[in-house]
Image (tube, rainbow over all chains, first blue to last red; front, side):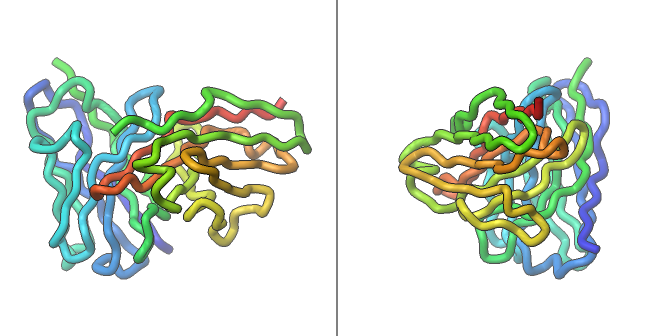
Length: 119
Length: 110
């Protein structure tokens, strides 16, 4: 069964840092782009970042560029999102999602992990 | 990187058809046939319903269909059923290696 399990969310003060992890199973992880998408409470989905299957390319939404870093460890079937200089408006459920192979959409989603930025 | 525009809500009775629009620009929806649609139940992860504007993944009922004209994509649910009540989001590849989601539409089955 294809599965994505996020972890690492929690409560952090403004200006703080947090690292999210997403463990993948049930598919050839090293063949897929991986994405992070977030959803603030009561709000819509927002694309955050993606990383190529071999980690050679990373892309970011303007709202997180320079503060967030996506990375992956194909040996551990895990993708990460390092979040620095966190702000209140970064508070959201963060979903890990699999990019469909050779395509421009995501086809599998994790259940999400909640990040709350508050003093 | 502005969100694609969707109606806040649409509603219909069981058996009726509803259509959700997703309006972008010539830089995203209008430039690429890479529009996807996701269904999200409250508190749950999104589920892929349509990709590449018109294609349905296996397991998605054929009452869900997609289309596009110029800068606007649409999702139509024909023969509306109670279990179709959910939030729906469109998403488009927008070039320059980024993606943009729609504002989301709540579908209510009357």
